[in-house]
Length: 463
Image (tube, rainbow, N blue to C red):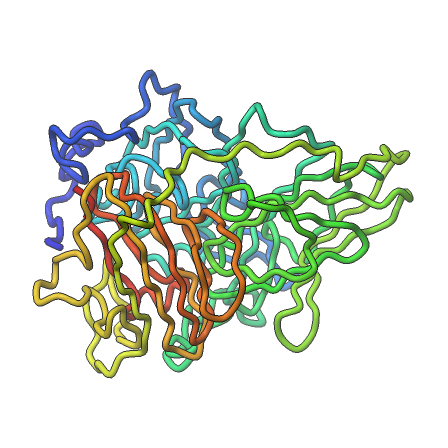
């Protein structure tokens, strides 16, 4: 993709017509009409207390109040945000999981220019789907995300069932030394394997936070894994927890959270029935690894409300089109390590190494033209990704701008879940069906950021 070298290439209003969808191409994911006053999201460097060693410097966030704000929207209602860049480097915002206009997707060189220091960019769209999503830069991604720029999005639907409380959890690690300051964001030997893990694990920027919730009540626990590396194996102790949505979409059939694995980029909505006794504690744990780790806990307060999970009505399905499997075209996507030694240029920079590939070629893809898409799709047509993982590691594969439905897996029984991120296991083959209903160039990549930046990235073109 040609790099944009002219600073302040176009102001936000003009950029909308210069990137992504071509003029004259209609899209149901168009700009929000009569958008409200934009929410100001100012990218800044700050400091905050993450450990007892003292304030961590060079934190990156939106605003000086610590963790990025939980951005709340309404399904089908216009939303607007103004990104103002107070960092000393370029940045953007990608609205992860939202099926919105391509020009608002936040990928530099593909859908918009960099937002340079002191400049701003206006995002405006109408979210078509309710659920839990998140936002992050797609620029110097490992550093900016690793230093704090990951925030949760809640898109509300007035038709959702009524809960007694809501708790939003932003799960992420930090790469900090013993003095509480940042250390190198990755190690090449780890990037070539599962990725480089953080040293300090947090929920909402706190270690093992505890929140009060009504005894005997129903809590909607919204979880977003915004970490650059860590895969979680989650379970709940001390309370009954039911999975009601994954990756922003209602599950086809609700089930108990006995143990569920979710990776970077994924989200999980739980209905937690709090214990009846005041002071009783329910804990969310990650049991991946050698010892269980408490992520966060909920403490019952007050007299029991005596609610039951069965009291909850259904979540409304999001309006994601269903693929016509009888007419769907097959697209092979093979994930592998690469024998390439030299780094190849990736979207918004490279880590200087090449470890991973899609269809045997590290970014920019399996094509003689380094700027060509992995596949060119016809608007409105059905497709099936035949996704195969030939590596010994799991990969959360994320598709921008569209959602797919899980059809089958070679290793396990799967439910027909609608999603934008699939955590493919080692040696697994899976079929993901979707309708190419959103025009533009859409990124496809592993959301373990080191994998993304060392080759496991490409893009699709819908026209």
